[in-house]
Length: 311
Image (cartoon, rainbow, N blue to C red; front, side, top):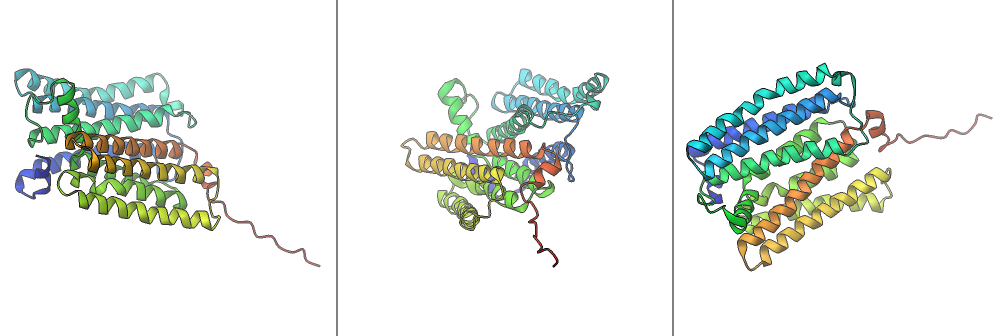
């Protein structure tokens, strides 16, 4: 079952290498799109990053198909799926030919953040599902049909191969990007909260204590800023409200997992709510980082010192 991933053994090495490769690929896309010193990326870069993520998700999806339904057809699909990554340079070159390298994306449009977040999240979901299938979290054929598919999705969303790369993506981006600490710290707390979520199928108390601790520390920090009237602008206010809403959805998922009479369905609800929160956080952060650097600095303005006139 899914607790195999918690038993350290040499058999886990291929999975760790695969997860590291996926994280490295995501890091390439994130660092390419969000330079440390800021700036709105060119359209050609956005197309390149999205193409890399879509190609990777396609390949991972074919690997999942081979894991749950091994055979000649699925093996052939994996070979064709691997070819999608080879198309990425041609897509990028075509965008340059169409002068996408001279245009920048519209930083006010939500489409690019949602597309990039959706493609990256889909990568991690498919990787979690594929690794869970190979490790025997759900037997071959059991994912067929609506009920079986939902059960397999629940076990996949409970996999550390889904949660830990997602947490790693968020922490990498938060550590790299130029953001005021007043914005960065609540987002770090929200990103760290799901780090212990995979223990929901092994030891729910570990999940409850880990997630609860991250939520409590972050909420105390937010409450202190609100009490001291140190919220610097409407953007930070919306951000902290979004973080609190994310914590509420995670807590609701934990309650459903604990109280639902059918464990697999409770775990599915828990995983879906966490998926919504993590995908939403990544979209929100990408939307924020697509803003020009001078706009981001307005969230923490330097106080102006008024001097008395010289008599």
